[in-house]
Length: 504
Ligand SMILES: Cc1cc2nc3c(=O)[nH]c(=O)nc-3n(C[C@H](O)[C@H](O)[C@H](O)COP(=O)(O)OP(=O)(O)OC[C@H]3O[C@@H](n4cnc5c(N)ncnc54)[C@H](O)[C@@H]3O)c2cc1C
Image 1 (cartoon, rainbow, N blue to C red):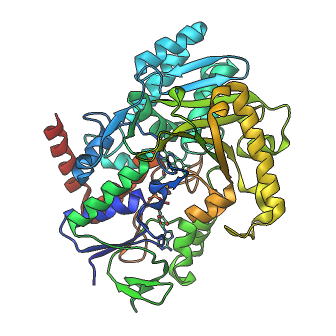
Image 2 (image 1 turned 90 degrees about the vertical axis):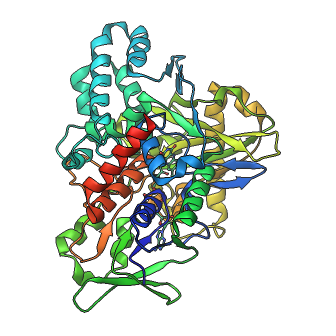
Image 3 (image 1 turned 180 degrees about the vertical axis):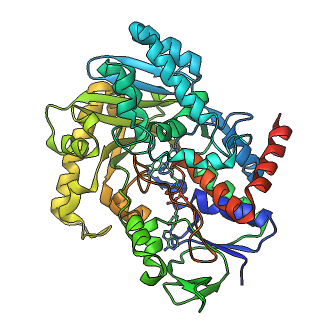
């Protein structure tokens, strides 16, 4: 019998587990994959370690909020944070030859962007100030912010990013540039509330860092901390049912092999649709079931994983956002029309480096092209390893298009590439167990009320990227928020404040 059982070992599940174990509870984490944190862990191929769920994050610099989380959970003892290039951690390049490097720091962005758009200085200043005003005061990330402002994350009635930018400037290029980071939450500019966008993006403007060894290093650090804290990690175990007692309180879970694990507290960090599937219909009101089951998915992507003959200097400490006109290539253009009206005229490719496995002198990179699962709907019944030839041929077409677009802008990447393989939304769906292969789970969109950690079932709590925000930071805040509901927010905030003092 456990005090608490966490379903899912992603960033949010592991954060919940560590916080509860640190509070003296006996905790187990149940994960359907073979190892914990499968999304963070990524995979190795051709001597290259490819990251899937983590490339870079904000707020990891000394004294910042995410670093404070790492400190409190003990992760900082096992990972090495590496700042990205402060002069430009994200390089934007358009087909027309426009190029801009996003530097670290609000004032630096205002200065360098104003050099590119001299008449827009006040609009740029306003955008940066508004963004940082939101992100500097996120609950838990900033321990002095009152917790009742947690709802600030979802701001159901906030204006969309598109409307916010329309009120700020008429310059289409500047609007497009300031919308590109939507890639980090997967919601189109016309659907994402401005304040939500600011919550996710602002921390990157303060500092942008990666972790030496990538997501795998973070997954391993979590695993070591779980061991140290005495948390039981049960992998290769899929929760099929959340079990209820006769008075409709939680009493544990049943796995797909029939094993029952008892606990009076269950925290579900899995996709809300799947949480619903684990419970009998009667337990939630129809309106709540409808709300959970009708949440829209964030964008998906085609992801090209490539190996190169040598490491690539252009990708050291920076990512590329490549925009090109979309006169040709219907498949990707079609995807963009579905992803968001703001991106109909241009195709976006995001390029980031991969880590060579130890002992290898090769390099590698990943290219993410936003898309939706609808483009692959004719093969949606197929599963990994059993796809028909027509799907494989279509994949080859998409790969060729992505390589062609990349070659126009970054010929040296393609010249150095010696192997590549494409993942589609169907690959992501089956690998991440995410409906439609959504990169970041459900959307947090304008006019949508936030999900709460507490449910009407005694002992059942929700957590995960669906609650607060996606990303390592959003998933960790959801862990603090859910455990705050269980243990008391003041207690966790107090511990973070103590960390704050120790760090300073
Ligand atoms: C391609 C890609 C790139 C990304 N890049 C970045 C980045 O650079 N920086 C950043 O901060 N974020 C990034 N993210 C986002 C980030 O990885 C996620 O937002 C975050 O990891 C989500 O954590 P989570 O715990 O909420 O969900 P998940 O990691 O999805 O955890 C849920 C877990 O539950 C398990 N599970 C599901 N159903 C069951 C069941 N029935 N029984 C048991 N276990 C179950 C799943 O296997 C999974 O491990 C990226 C995501 C993707 C897909």
